[in-house]
Image (cartoon, rainbow, N blue to C red; front, side):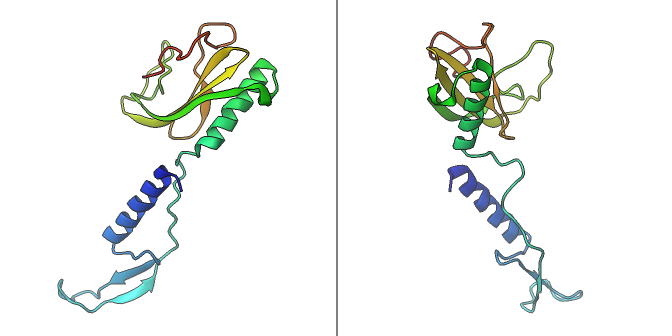
Length: 157
């Protein structure tokens, strides 16, 4: 289990406890009029709760594969010729995910995400993803969107 998934599972367990729900899905209830400190309670079945969130980040392997597939398609090269330089979790400073576009407005909040650097034909390609796991090329001004050097600009942002 990834660190991110373990943290989400812990958060879900704490939330369930705060709501009076046990991990097995049971809910402790008291009848109306019972004293607040009463030890008498009944247990009713609760709906099944899942700890998987829709916007949970996919694991790095999925993001890397998506980036490799996209770069292969862009450059018209076999995926096997693309080298992973680095994949790392980042906290983007805003909704631009480290790749602002002129004329766009972005949310001003820290966004968890991932940066994937790939190398093909001696050039480096900088892919970014946010919490939704959608990976995209943060292209340079060059025709192919790549860089001649590592790290590319904005690497540590």
